[in-house]
Length: 143
Image (cartoon, one colour):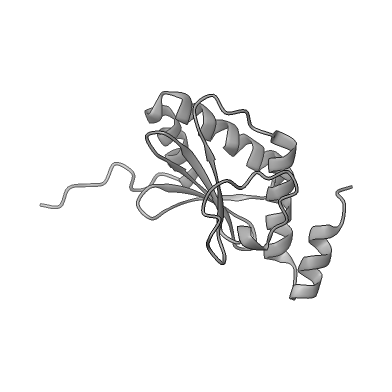
C-alpha cells in the first residue's frame, strides 16, 4: 500500500507557509522576511515548490530560491552573474558563470531596498528580449 504524501494537493504558497512555521526560529523569520520583500518588489511573482522542498520565485523564468540550512538562509539568484550588484549583496556562489547567492546568517541585517532592486533587475532580465535590451534595462534607474 502506497503512503499518501501530506504535501500532495497543497499549493506552493501553503508549502512555503508550512516550511516557515516548521523552522520556528530565526531561519523561518528570515525566510518570511525575504518572501515578503520578493512580493513587494514584484507583486506578480509566482511561488513554486521544487526539488523536494525548495521555495522558488519566478516571473518570466526563475528569479531566485530560498534554501534553509542549519547556519544560513541562502537566496540563490538563477541568473545572478548577469545582474549588477552595486551594494555588494552577493556573498556566495561567486565563482559560477550563472548563479549568485546571498547567505543570511542569524542576526544579519537585510538591506531591503537593495534586495528589492536586485529582484526587480532579475525580473527585467527574465522578461526582456535580447542581450542589448537586458543590459540597458539593468542600467536604467528605477522610477
